[in-house]
Image 1 (tube, rainbow, N blue to C red):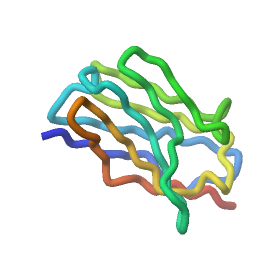
Image 2: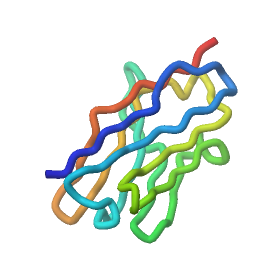
Image 3: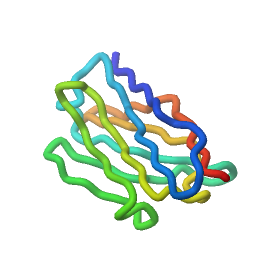
Image 4: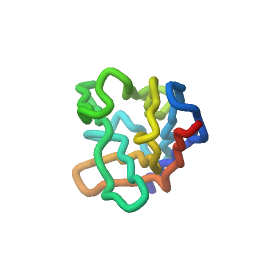
Length: 116
């Protein structure tokens, strides 16, 4: 059974940085066709933040381009989201998702709060 668990969230001041991790178990992420980070702010719909394919192609939401970097370490079976220049509007619960031919797998989420 595939399990994804996020970590690394917390409270950070505007302009600060955080690195989120998504640790996978039950399957190596190299076998995932695609993985991504999503976020959901209070009262808003869940939105895509960044995605990465098994071949390493990346895609970012316009709101985080040049500030966030998605990466995956197949040997560590972990996906990362490095976040720089954080803004209050980045405050949300961040979720990781992995996809294969059969279904999507979601982690429980980690809270990121950007506030002074």
